[in-house]
Image (cartoon, rainbow, N blue to C red):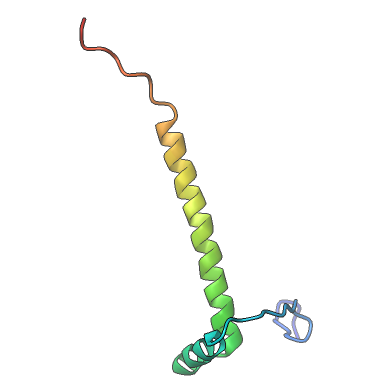
Length: 77
């Protein structure tokens, strides 16, 4: 086995308590996509985290774009 190959036996593990019905939803999504429940769950978490990072970047860019605006100049000259 190559060093770069994924090995689920040595992968980091994390127990998650799911609200009622969520496990069934994950299972249905996995079955519909012919994927494992784990891969569906990991993809959903990754998409959420990527969305949070994107939101932070966009808000920071907006704050930086607005921050350097000079004070309004009066037109009564």
